[in-house]
Length: 361
Image 1 (cartoon, one colour):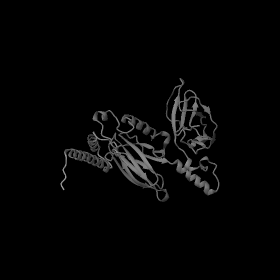
Image 2 (cartoon, rainbow, N blue to C red; image 1 turned 180 degrees about the vertical axis):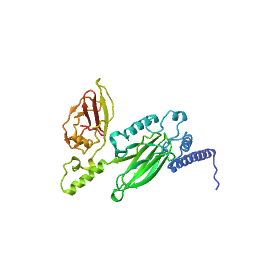
Image 3 (spheres, one colour; image 1 turned 90 degrees about the horizontal axis):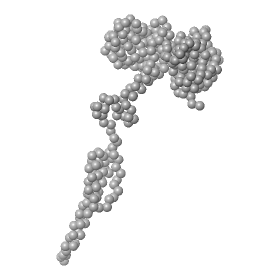
Image 4 (cartoon, rainbow, N blue to C red; image 1 turned 45 degrees about the vertical axis):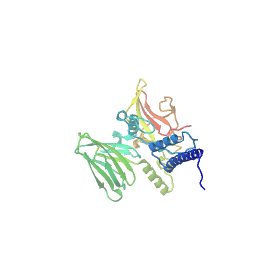
């Protein structure tokens, strides 16, 4: 039996096919978007435009959630790069970061000082992360001396063309020391050394000059290591030594993060930077409860300046704090945020002591 298709029926069928085709294309576009876990941004835009055109005359359905790729940092235009602009997320300018680095490096650097010499050897107090300045001269060798029993694992220099290096040893058995010998070959040059050992990492900045004034050798004092040794000796004898450095400290609580600043106050009341006085403390540390100010060994036989506490580093409101002298130490039964040792009146020599981590009451 043959069926006749009328004109209205054809119109209805054509409309259904058209609608079905639009929905099929729309579903295909959605599938392409869903299939990509990290879609290309241009492809996402292209598919979105196609969806909007397809759905222009139909009811819009909720699109699947699309995760756009994370934005990538791109090189700055040359003009901005030359201006010192940073492309980091914080927006901090490169010039600002360089200035901060300069301040931080200056505070972390130790330079040769007359009171640090024992004969021709310059002694520094070792602390992790500190940079040590060394002055060499063309035609002369500078010896970098390590602690007894400490062995060099490796070393690296920034400028290997103008500086030659080699290792050697002195002593034998338990007295053996390793030395790194450095000789500049060209004046007015600089380099840095990173020396790793079985115990520590040393950061050294070396400068070469053409004069005969140079450092023959450098070595280090090791405050924390000495404390540990004396504590062990005290425990081995079964009693506590009367020396303050032999008390039973909680080693995990020892804090050596103190800065010393040297100033001179004139008759006009103004302060200016000055050289370290002969009685300047070697170091300051605390155990979380008490503060210890260590002076040179000879200080036990001399009169030392009084100690004052200040509320802030810039304050002039100083108050005398109770302390006691034990050997070549001042012992304060509290923590100090900011303190000053003052000797004389006009001019007055000042050593300002600032705890890196301030105390908040």
